[in-house]
Image (cartoon, rainbow, N blue to C red; front, side, top):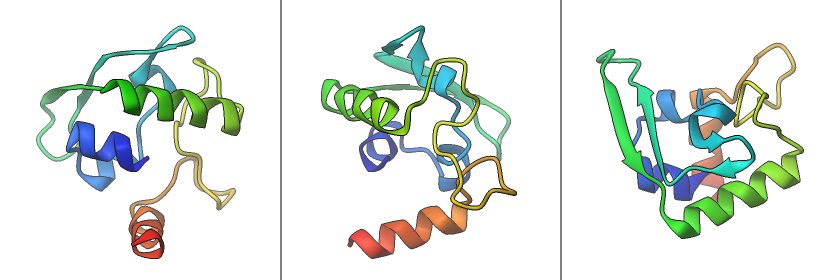
Length: 96
């Protein structure tokens, strides 16, 4: 997650809502991705480095995700479809 945050420079609210299809083409992690920013409603394109692609591929395997899955970072709370911004911030503080 943090490699992807560094590569994309996305705000936490955009990063936590990434979908598998935003970063994958079929079963392959893309070298570039484009998403619509929540705040500005403008597309932002970013490069995904080789190291990050390897990390993303490992996460997909570990989490059992597929290209058709909606959320790339599922929530630990079953009522929420994706990791919340607060959960992301708490995770960042725990690893610092």
